[in-house]
Image 1 (cartoon, rainbow, N blue to C red):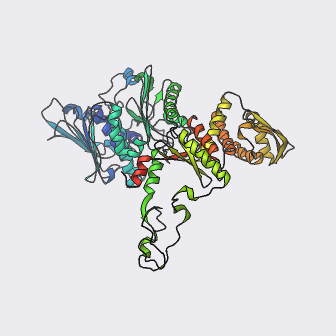
Image 2: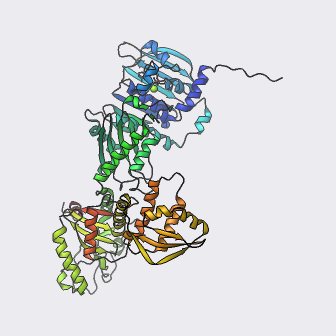
Image 3: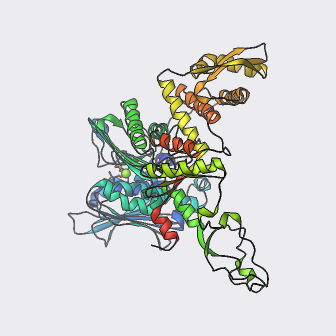
Length: 629
Ligand code: ADP
Ligand code: MG
């Protein structure tokens, strides 16, 4: 006979272990809960001490208000919390905790002790147990505040241990948790110690949240971020968003450096991350991510934080509003700073320059009339190819001819220029006088048929002509599309492009949209398409090549792709076709036209793929290179 199943109430410690599965994923999640509790207890100093990356021991001590003796055992009971008492409070949550689940959950999967001295009490107490059982309360010496120790995490749930990653990864998670909380609480000092070694330390600061956050940001994110970040500050009715976002040219391969807060609570919410991504949509290549720290303030009742056990996701009363505000705030500052380029590439370039010596410096010359004076050259540092200098010190041989690129032109008078070069040189002279005050300066030369070299008031500018022009065409194109004014250029003889039946069908399905871009196509039998007109803005294009790339775009369009994303994808494909290639010779006038165009085009500091379109070497840096500073 079959036994009828009996419904039983689970023993409390089993229920706790189940809850632990949600709240306590890894050492870092324990630390998150404990530090949040300390912050809720108004601590101004918090120390996190871990051993073996949190696996053998985690101890969090704080100087908060502490817990009264008879409340300590209560804190370890499920759903015991001092933070809310009515359901109504749930919709007005300002503290981190409220579920009363963390401590019992953590205690059920570790050897746990809590020592606390309440602010209005003379003595301190310790309460400890193992696996959520056998708790006992004993007197203990301690200062006001609370110390929670979690030893041998997951000792009684070995399956969980297996889910842990390499120790270094766990440590990164721990740091991440501490930093996330520390960034939003600049008046609290934080210390993180691993195996006796200090891993992080933030002193406390008083004053404006944003200003106070800066030193912590630069310690953690690096000075590079600070140098390449722009402030965001937007207030609207009862919402506010403040913080820093990176310039598009400063981008990373992961989204790990995106710190977002709702009412000072760190969150990793899809809606927020989506809004950020959207703000950078056509400024970054897929797979590249901006960095940011954004504090978003909303009325407590506009957001529900009780949707995720670890409370890192939230639900908004009006998600669209929040999305729109973040997108707008970020996009606006990016537009304002759209002609700035990240300092990092220039710095990198600079650090690759080094003072070298000519190979012939210490060489005895056989029959050179006069040894050349030792002079300074720049050698590009390259790990793979050591400079020849050192090896040549004792050999007897004639000086090697200087590579052309290194030779210094003594006086331009000794050069006779072919007529058109002379014209160019004259144009350069006039433009140099009239344009050096412009932000992008005056074109003075083209390098390797690919880069425009310009002289600006405060330094040297090198523009990647293809990347820059691509951006210019893209932005102009976008403007035309937004105003519905895309000019078409009819082809005298329509171009027939052969392709597979499925591609033909795919493209024809999009023919209306393509027409809006100025690309007019018609079906030509089952396996070909005839191109009748192309976007005028692109000038003369290779229609076949363009169509092939568009097919690629159409193929890659996923169901989830929004119309906006599709437009951007196609725009950038087309812009790429319409722009000046590398290796095309440009006159000084052409180059100046591009520079002037860049000055008045939004987002001109980066191409559609987030690469910089130009780099700058500040006059000070040039002087530094020559030791004049
Ligand atoms: P919650 O934070 O959701 O209330 P927890 O299980 O994290 O639940 O904590 C239970 C209770 O224990 C808290 O409500 C609080 O009263 C008390 N507590 C926990 N940690 C501390 C601490 N560091 N200082 C003071 N009180 C604490
Ligand atoms: Mg808590």
